[in-house]
Length: 204
Image 1 (cartoon, rainbow, N blue to C red):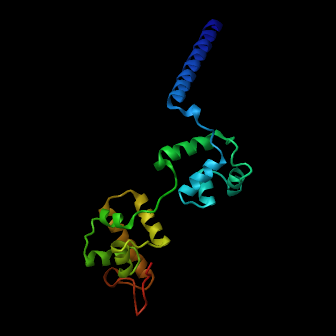
Image 2: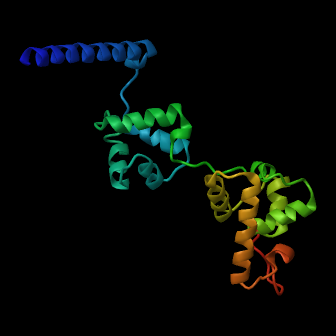
Image 3: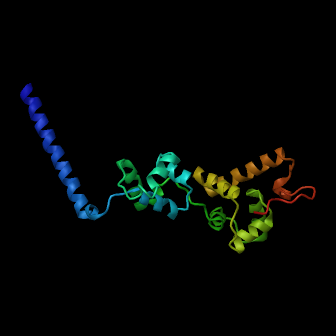
């Protein structure tokens, strides 16, 4: 029995050695061994390139802002990262951006087209109702490259995360607008839009 256990340990040792050899060869072949270690400056560069606040960037790596500030501080920014998983996260975020928890704002014109809406005044006015805005703002966004306000961007992001079809998304948007319209005192919002009794709808 002891002989069998010893033999298994030996085989396991040889296996581990083989795996390490393969990993080492792959690393060398890819040229990673010639690159500098990841450091706090690399984290900060990633944050700036993605236009993130320090709080959002720190959260993407599972860190508190205080720890991020420590790693990115000029006095320590050049030191290699002591936690290897931070380097692995940075590596995959750089090589496969989709793996990052950071969400880039949806393009409102692309979202409009994805819904299957047409380039017509009627569809643009309908879209304005579905995103809680006045028609002029939608004209500005779609025809003059205007930038939506953050609440609208968050609304589009929420809808995108659902991962449902354009038809299902339109229904959800209409249901939400109708339900909120009733609660906010605009019972016929899907017909008259968000302005009521002379009030103006949001323009951003």
